[in-house]
Length: 375
Image (cartoon, rainbow, N blue to C red; front, side):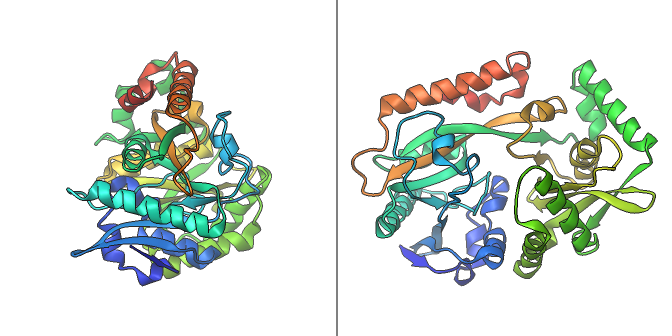
């Protein structure tokens, strides 16, 4: 077990061999791009005779974030030392993490070793414990089961679109009539106001204009950073190589770029990451670019799933998305005492799962079958 100062020192090929289609935001190039944009953080590396067996990128959390990266908010009322510093594992500000670890007989041992070294790093920093957030439900349960005192706490729901081979036509065939009619009305309204759609690589899609649109949209919703931060992020992606996986869906009006959705290809998934729009863009540009055009483009390029992330769940479900459970794994820095009891964890997970079932009571088909593990 080793700790390195930067992902740059780790073999990209060996790292990426540890992740599957759901691991884009845990890939070597993505983590490296975050380092270039925001500064490097230590990476815990488990090595075996055949090479790298597991990795755990770390970062210090975002104390200013009171929602997505606030432990007290993520714990949803469950009592614990959430106001103290924690060592965060996964991509910096990633709302979709994976556990990069080799399969096989020693997998549980490697997972346990990664958590043990993360706990040791937390002790060195004076942190109360470690948190590995925004993990797919099955991955969180497996990770928590590998080490004494580790707990998997249900957080929220991820949203994904299945991509039929015939694109939106196929998706419409399985949709409710009211949804299908809404999709068509929104697409017609976008076109009636002069909106057109085109796809470009990131390098060919006017990166400065994309940075301007994304930064402006974030500012309208209270996020800081500005255009220079977004330019730095996109430049870091070019340097790290992750930009070669990026495709951009642009909306134009009278020849001018008025909206942009940035996606990344990984295996047979398409990940939606950045969105920016002018206030005078044609109506429904968001849904046209991030859903309707994206499904058709993904189908034409042999992709089978679009990852849409953690927001606007009802709107995304009404446009064909399904919900998958996301959970975090927490563990104290010294292993004892446990941060939360088994009974409290079970009650919390059942309550959170039940709230999602109730929230989508009128659309039970929106919940993936993997939710059943949490009731």
